[in-house]
Image 1 (cartoon, rainbow, N blue to C red):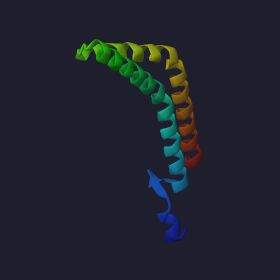
Image 2: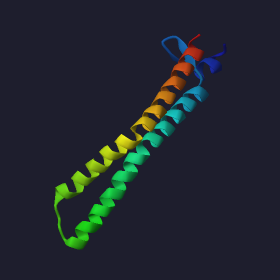
Image 3: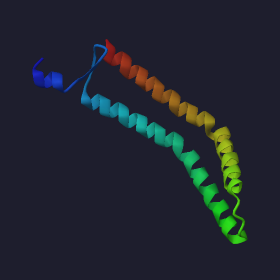
Image 4: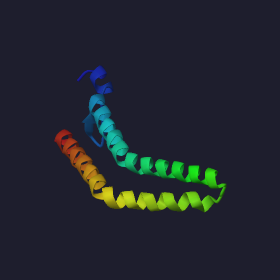
Length: 105
């Protein structure tokens, strides 16, 4: 291998990884993170906005009033979508093991 080829590879514990493969792994990780986090963040945003509107209308400025409904909504969304989120994590983990074993041998 020439020096240019050696420079274009990442070597970890004796296993080489091309920059393209590293970018693909990071891309899959970020996509999985967005899929998992977006329902939780979306529900927290919607509940927070709803509670804020109610606080403005009623002029009740209580800090715990915003926290408790968000926590209840987040627990609810984790209860309903937890299996789906775990499935995404499981698929990502399987893909990463496949990549690790395919490149390691």
